[in-house]
Image (tube, rainbow, N blue to C red; front, side, top):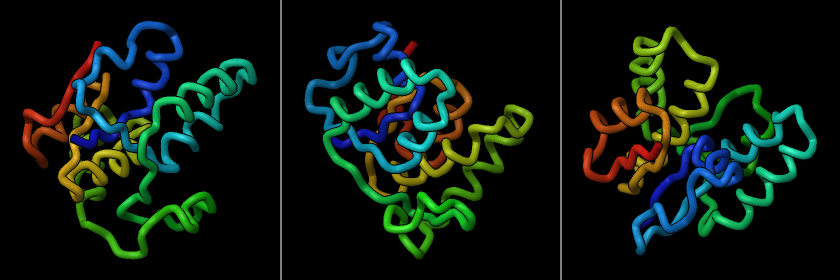
Amino acid sequence: MRYVVDTNIINRIADGRLSRLDFPVDAELVAMHVQENEILATNNPQRRIALLDVFELHQDVRVPTESMTWGDPADWGHAKWGTAGFAGPIKATLDGLNQQRASNHADSLIAEVAVANGYGLITADRDLAAVARTFMDPNNVLLLP
């Protein structure tokens, strides 16, 4: 099964807190430009390189996001023009849970790919896991420590 991986999972792998062994055996990991953008925004150059290495090593499949974000030049060529219609409701629900945390926009795009394509989601974010479970099969949302 394909699983979209939240960026916080990449951080935990880089820190040695998780490994590929923590995922289902048949997991095919899906990434998109969203995780890469979040990693590239890391201020510490050594940390950024370590995260990019983990990202490249562990992404099995790269897909476009289901929605395009106007004003984000990284979206061009990496996002679909149409929208699956889930990112807005996911973000609104997340905003209600955690006082509009800055990562909610990226998290909503990540979750939308999972929901729209029938993929699972792997995250360490309790709020994102809770919201995703309302939009998709709750058994396909893995909340890791």
